[in-house]
Image: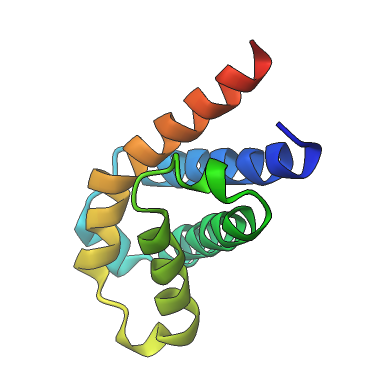
Length: 115
């Protein structure tokens, strides 16, 4: 794996880990009521989406190994450009249902590179 690719993958892994840490023992109601928590989670998703976008341009074969990578990029675009229409339950659903598998996929891909 090229150095640039590894860096982008590490950015995705690290940002995913941050979201998982931020959301640990939290619920949707916590997310809705805590502006700092929302800001932190949304910022990390912006980083994830931008890193996936760069990865897709730099090394499409690697990006294709990430399930629904185009949806990840689209989610980032909504968070940034459609900030006024972001629905809290949708973000929380991504945190609880989609992010853990993305995190594991990226960790697996990074682990394969070390072999």
